[in-house]
Length: 575
Ligand SMILES: [Zn+2]
Image 1: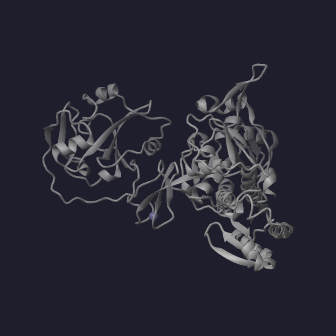
Image 2: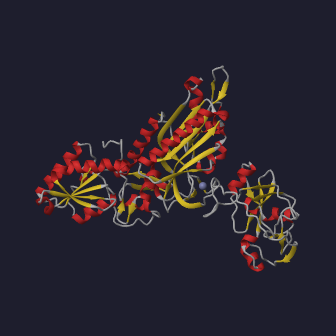
């Protein structure tokens, strides 16, 4: 490709609208332009990178036996009403009406559509397993779209759906996708981890997220330093370690704590550490009201508690409900004499002589003890994991890091097939629901995450497998016929070898060309200048390492090809 033919409008200035590096760099490198909040156009350079990622995805999905389909973006409301999500999905679902007043939505995900296809087209166990995928535009009306294509409202997604006859087959399909995803992100040159995740609005029982490690990531992940346990914060378990206190049990006392409500206030007032206090938090699931106990220096993890209770929804009690069940204002609740189901975090086992609220205004209890003063109905893991907590799987400790979720895989079971009547006939002729899995990758988000992880102060450093071009040829002076002839020769030779080359044939100052070269992040730069050319050489610079070598003119194709194959890794061809 010749630069002068390419629409590549790079920007010198930092775009004010962008908060994260990937967003700034995608704007500056002329990859994207904003259309409206959370809606973007991809310009040629951006499209080339998107296509690279899509190609890797296609190759790995096809290799795993999945088949590509293409569903519509406009989805009939009736299908969503069948699954119950027309009501559940809330305002993220963009609902529209056609000229006949029929209701539709713009697809944020395609479980309903694919289940409809399956119930029409799959009849027999002989047709199973099937895995169908598409790479297509999605729309989710996010409240706060931000970070450019990272959290956009309109975005390109690869979504796949597997159908199996039995649980064993469904598991196999799930792990096949797990492996395919690992390969996709590895081939895209990303440092990532697969972590256990919550299932959210998609539903299902089991899920993994693929997290690209980046300090700017929105998600927090807990990961063990010793074993391969990793989970997102919502889900992260904490190991059960009972520390047997050898302290003597003291007599229960009531103390005045006027207007002292928070953990900080109470512990400071009583001059004890937060580890000696137990917080009592009242929750309402709509079906029952319960009290959850966690140590003063720990935070409650509401998703873990909700899952433990098997509740669909759960809310922290308001002031009125608290007063109703504890007979005291907020801040003075405690488990002693409380007539509610009590669920305590594992960290409370073995605690002695602790502080709790007294269920009386301006009063706390000290030297509270389990068994003697109150009974816990269930001990379980309900606290938010933090750095240094014990791993749930081994004696190791948890470390926290930030990441960007680029893919997620789910085991859906029969949630959609049962709701929508998608069945097949087994060998005995019995009708059974299809067992499903679904698997998503944000294509634009993968590109943004790659940039978030691979850049420096001068611009993007593309992993070669997703770079818009492999090589940039930079003649320093367009007026010099000899330089231009050498640059053109190299350009032709490399193209013949299947290398993707961009020739910067613009009539610009060398400084401008060098700056743009760094900004757009092409892995190899060949600089053709007068001085080196006289010695029959050109300068080759590796964008990532900054390493510069002089290469004989005739040797350029060979050296370039070698460097590209090395960076691409084994088994991946250049063209
Ligand atoms: Zn571990």
